[in-house]
Length: 235
Ligand SMILES: Nc1ncnc2c1ncn2[C@@H]1O[C@H](COP(=O)(O)OP(=O)(O)OP(=O)(O)O)[C@@H](O)[C@H]1O
Image 1 (cartoon, rainbow, N blue to C red):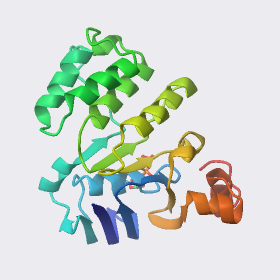
Image 2: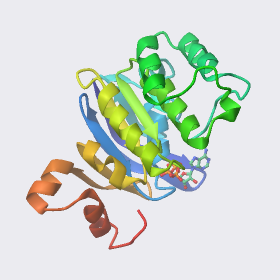
Image 3: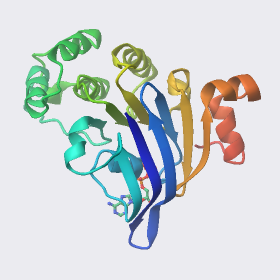
Image 4: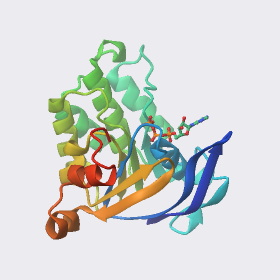
């Protein structure tokens, strides 16, 4: 499995959300998609998921152009919270499993235990952290070749973030899957990342292997980003 994004342009009115993006994502790797708000990260993930289509250029999964059909091969955690409040945690897992043939119930039950999510609890009574964890269970329990996480840490406290990072390492199947994480929380995911990609105003302004950044340039991802962004604090 490889994801190829070639010369992609996406316009919303006069604005170019993506302005000639070319990238390749390989199986077995974890990619961090970094950049300020509005830089185009979500648009790129939605394109790989087959929810948004390029105006110019192509996006392909294992050589096949992304269409509505290929989206079945992609597990996508959106920034939106799409749970039904009246459902319990168990109902939510049952419902998600009914939507996706690739849903792995054993993985889901293990993740629920690991995150200490009580299946009998109503979704509406969950804390923000537990809702975030439930979203992650629903995504990671799918046996898809592509996993996309859009801001999986947003609004979660450091303890929750840490437990999420641990579970990502445990539940990703590196033989089969590619993981792309769009996030602002660089410190949390730095230990996970194979490659970091920085987008600004719809263009890729940096792409590095995290290990070579560290070993050859002596830079953390955060320090590299600060260099790229001209020492701006916010990324
Ligand atoms: N459906 C849409 N209609 C109009 N403009 C859009 C739409 N989706 C995105 N945009 C615009 O495209 C640009 C890129 O947005 P995108 O959501 O991809 O950025 P992002 O890097 O994911 O930011 P954030 O972290 O805030 O989600 C922004 O200027 C945004 O306002």
